[in-house]
Length: 202
Length: 202
Image 1 (cartoon, rainbow over the protein chains, first blue to last red):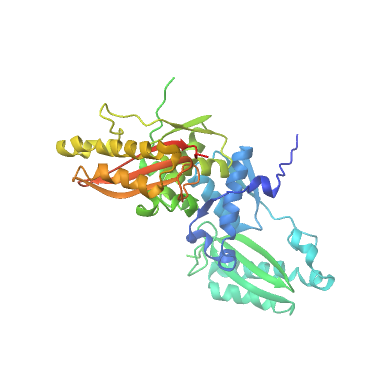
Image 2: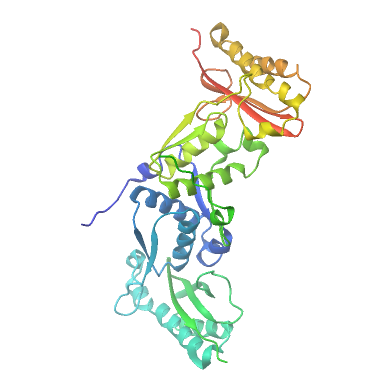
């Protein structure tokens, strides 16, 4: 059986509503959080409400919102929610663009340019995985930027290579890493990422 | 059947713990919150954890911690916890002193003086209820202070007359009100309160 829980805004945030659930800046201060103050506070608050209202055994979140998934996992663990948080792979258009409701905001020209984000991330991953992970984070980011620069319509907001679980910056790329980008195509902000594991050469 | 849930501190706050549940300053900024910054943030966080770990149908909180009960009720409502929050009357010693683990910290002399807190609150309530509630909040507080002044060992931290549900200051005492006091007996901080309803005279 499928069910959709779709409460109104007024039902979720009635008059007098005054509670917030917050994960600390270690996980929420970087990446998207740097440019969207308060965003993850809203996310964790509404997801806490959702988990209480639904009491699911398992909740699924998309890999595209990688930071969101890490933050929600932290929140669910810390507050003893009895739920398994599962991160599912990003669903993509045929040309590689990550599916998002925001894609509908793109002009036809922007839509044609948008897959460059995915191509750039794959180029970064390729470099990071080559030569037994000897490429530094600077070189990996430069490789991503080079590809993105091929589409002048793209304006990068951030490009980061961090530990995939802790979201901490990496001095050198190793272990399970998250290579994430946020970029504007015109007035539309898109995000995407790749997560991969680097074994350091001996 | 009775059960006691008694986790260790390490189990409640393991390494990496980084989430807080917070109710806004409208309810948490006054009364005890004014003197204990961060206290209610800790309370709502640990109670949210408790509610998730136990999933009770009903949870009971003492009236002595009146602000705590209001804050927890707000949190449980806002975050859609499926629980009934019930506030139970304060249990008292025979001489009127509200039971508290802190009473064990009182010296014998302080213990003998401590019931003055209850007597002072009852004097305040008596004045507030007299004359169809025409006594102003200033007069009610003065009546409480007069009784407390009879015990030099008592040092008042705050004395407030607020709306019992909203915890907002009252210009004039009316409706359901909370008359609350925090006072030091030596180095021990004690709190107590009375909640009562005033019908304004016509």
